[in-house]
Image 1 (cartoon, helix red, strand yellow):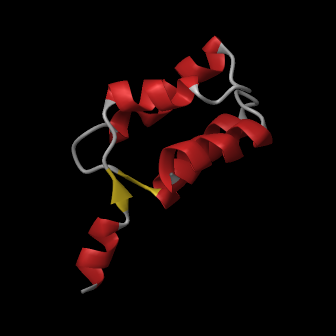
Image 2 (cartoon, helix red, strand yellow):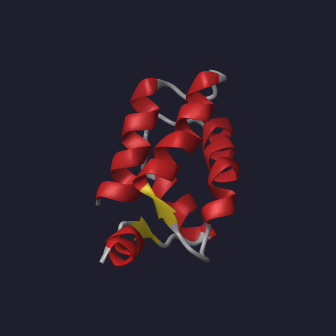
Length: 82
């Protein structure tokens, strides 16, 4: 049961899906979109990305001032919570 709940909490996203969804985050510049796309590259397809992994990747970008806190929240919402 624990394994299945962990597996179901992952979201499968392709490179194209990530790029399309990020385009709808109005607060992101092209440079920021590229940084987010690159940060999420290890999670494309394959095993997917969990909300924890997504937040960690975005926190790293936030830590180096590549995205704002508003961008981080908007990306989490559009990629994981929709």
